[in-house]
Length: 244
Image (cartoon, rainbow, N blue to C red; front, side):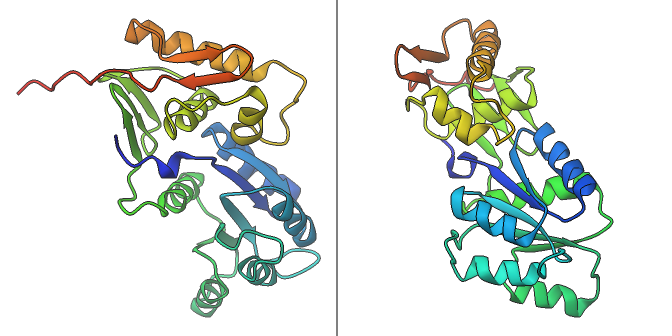
């Protein structure tokens, strides 16, 4: 099985004091399957970081209440925040000195506005893979293969058409095959704060993903554990050999 560590819990905090821009970035990242929350001030960002284990922060430098560099320094200082969270600075400050200062303050990457959303998505993928030694965007469990860079899911080479949320859910299951996750756990780790905890969105999404996988696999792939939750079956068999 490939190294799956980079596929666990991909939750992003977008920090920008321009609500329209922040919401636009959030919508774009949610379409890619990430769980995304938004903060419109430095203080709000630090409060959220203290409560939620985010994987990555996109951080504007020009905030109304404080400089984004100060937010980054406080993150790296571990002020009730996981100092290992990755930080992608998004700013119109485009001089070499600005970029060097941001990186010296602890940013993992620096993207100058205006930017293409495709490049933002690529930077996010790169940063979220950085923990693994190989930096591989591909995860495999038996015949089931997920390619995060191409946003493709396949079974023995046959593509499985899924929505962004189904893709994110499968990515989470792939991180730990056989592990049972409750609906509450999945809602917290795969969805974002906008999700209504009183809806059946988790059950519905698991159900549609399960049916799509079973239709191409011809066998169960995701199992419901009554009273506990759901799991990706630990034994899915071996992938068919490649001819030639």
